Length: 432
Image (cartoon, rainbow, N blue to C red; front, top):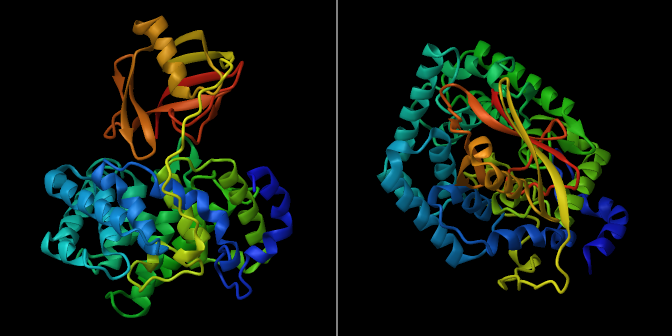
């Protein structure tokens, strides 16, 4: 059935997508697991060469019990080898994600985590983040998303770092939750997951803390959840790519999805985006799939099982066959500019229809290298811009290159955003 036909049926099927015993989660039911096939196949058929950057994929594979022994072994080996080679330069968030992925769902990789002392090494990196905040105006070495991810991994792994002592750093009013003047939903969601883990361990008396610590944690969680809910738009939270982690945060800390209509709205919008191909990148598919299957990162220490068992998926290992168009694609004209404070350069370029933001930047650089030269690096979300006009982004200075369309920040990267005819695109030197 073509996606367009599936979409016509979507409205009729939404209530059947919601499990009959819905509590605080919003998952696709066993009968409708086929709707998730595009996400699973995106992850299964990708080429993975970036080592620790594949940890998101391995974590999702294990959480939702996708059975692909060959690929799981490949990802595990790549992550372990990358840690051995690059451990000193690996960031706190990268190491935290690797620990979660390698240790998820009670598997043999736990031996590597123990023998390589990964949890204690993460504790040291986390401590360095906090020390940097104390001496550099509350700025961590990385960002608050990675800091929250590190706290979550330490909490779930029984790390020795004094977790309750760092709770004040996660106050919802901290400027590090904001990016470009807007509340970062995925950062807030990761903090909710981390703080919920801390809260549960305090309640079980697994962490030494007093009632003030527990009360403060509850207040922070409630405030962050409210900020996430205030970013709701047509069933999404922030944007399509932050919605998966926002759903996880709401599962563990809110009654939002006890209302079936809220669940219906989220599933409708997310599945529509699945059918439209929004999750073409494996990491994007990996971040939305656990929530759609009722899982959260707090489940990593459990024996994982899902409503959608592996035999419910139609996993294809066939690579897409490229089709040569019989008619040359039409060209479009796009306006492109670079802004560094008061310095502004602009041009108009012609690119093929279907081109992405990066194609426009390359075309402009070809026109005038002095005005539009740039550098980039490959990351799990595709290429990202590190330098324009020899001006580099810098974590210590909290600077980055922001991508905009018609004056509005983009939620997709330079290698993913498909440009339109007559559009005004801009890369802007910005701070966060």
